[in-house]
Image (cartoon, rainbow, N blue to C red; front, side, top):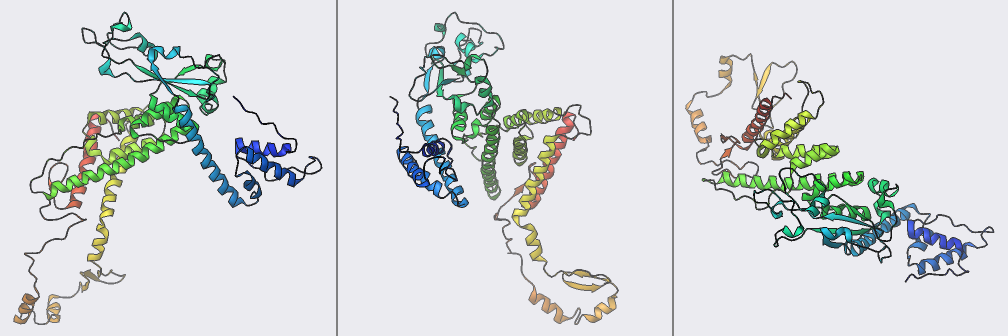
Length: 504
């Protein structure tokens, strides 16, 4: 039952107008209209605003009007109100839209009758179908998949290969569960943020017509993806696992929501970079464990497979023209190039990148290969910078003098030697050269290095450590190994381009 509130005659209309605008738009006027033209004084209007705010439960309305002269407080209060309003909207969305979603069998989805007069004021239904697992599809005697007419109508896809139609849905195996569809009761006012729905509802399409029961609009995506899209439309928040990244991008492009596409690209790159750093640290730990053991042990493969399909991500970046995803994918591949460069999928990706240039000439570069080379050099350059090798070399030779202009000498180990000094003069300047006292002094100052142990480099223990390159050869230290690995990966890239008949 709808309750109405009759405005008392003692409340100025201007006060009610201020309360309604603040309720819907979150705006408070800087100046109140009062005076002879309104028949109300400023005090009467403020008193009326206070009564309206109390009845409509708007506790911050009066304070916002009184503090409208202070810009800092106004910005702070507006940010707080925006955050509070977003939280309230998200809570309402989850308690009404998501909680009232309807799960039915796909064959019965179009028969659902949802009255227009409902408690959550929904005026349209969005339908998504659960994906069909290939293992659950019935098979014929010759091993081909058997299509269900209901599924064929729901997916509206052209079947590929030999198929046969069952005479009725009863021919499906009894153990197989029927396919489900989910109906989301939503509001057109929120869907208008999508250009797709905006064009649909403002035209003469069937979906734009007002009927007794709510119109059912099918959306070609998974239920989880549609929840992400609806959460963005209602709350302006984008949160999803990495495994749904490409699906969210496809749905955002399908529904013409450019801002969601940009936010999804940012989230995918952020989650992917975090996942990449964790995997890189894990590989370094495994590499150190192998190098420090006399007999390398077989490392157990990680139970959880890589959530991110980088090939799908970069193809999605190409398809939807998202530059951020292209750069992220190239950096991701460069930091894991040894795991991908020998795969046929990587070769197909490079060839596909070359074909993206229309009328490609032999001198044209391949964008993906150029980006991988750039991030590959960044990867190994950062390895040397993080190790502090330059600082170590500077500390070992602090006293090396610079040769100035006009000097004819050379600086060796901090001692300046004249090039014109003869052997006789050099011998005369050295006391007790070849004498017994010099030999005794040299023996006294000698240091026994037979038991000397080298210091660990970059935190890696030196006892029993064997640094091996990607091709299995033994390197002298970690830096030599990284330098060799860098050259090996570059050579593999060049050989791959030669194999594909490309030049970059």
